Length: 391
Image 1: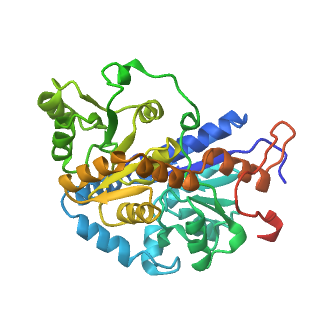
Image 2: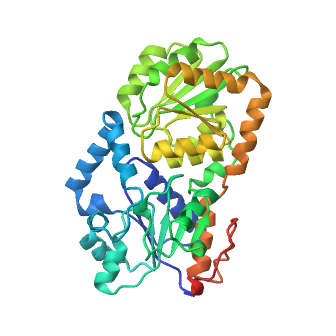
């Protein structure tokens, strides 16, 4: 065990916002425990800014124009092995920059919130030895996350833990921690007038979140029947898509049961204001919705990890998947038509919630690798943990 205050390096990527948000949640938990030397590194952006910009563009366009192609590539590579030539290429970008950052910051442990596993190759090349941790940020497990040199895996659910073990990861290296989200999702907030001032307490409030970049398709087709109904009111969060926000404001801004916002920082407060959510099935948003106990309606999930996320939550009875606006509106109305429907959905949500996931992960890391009198730690999770000496 190491008695000094640890230095932690978190490697993420800016494809969407989820990996960064998970990294910030882990950083906040370390800070809360008095550990302030935490470096967040967007490795591809720093090492290869041109390639990073190009791949981000292709990634975003694949969601809009070629989702089937993206899903095909994701699925045919899902079982990829870490020693294949393709894996070696994917996990080699940024090695020189990472070596430089490790020299500069001398971290004691590396955390990945994105499956760009440069470290195993770098350690083999240089003889460096550091503990490696993977935090899987979806409800689905792609082969890119799996590598024999990774010491610890934190996953969303027991089902995903069992899948990881079935794919060859030693059982004692995998903890069903949940996906880390900001700590304010575990707090009860006072109503925020910015969100509540126009709300009618007699109506159910539907939150429509278009993602960080506002790329969810068919938004206007979803909003129209909901705001035309006497039962519902809609709050739309458009992320960084200012054009979408402008269009929705022009089209529905004069409706008393509609509000529109751009990028919202106070997502926990916003979610606690609402009765259900329509959203893209990204791992972080789904985890935030679970923490907020919101029934989920997932519209036209993109093939790949988002579709797999959606199908998993649907199989657990806590999310509904729709491919047309009319089907989605029918699902929303059906949920609130009978109290038993809603109670059953909420009971299933409670079974899958993983409160305080970031703290569970950080506590486990500290217990496995670091011990200080100033930083008492405890592990709260369902999985039995083995000492690092057994790993």
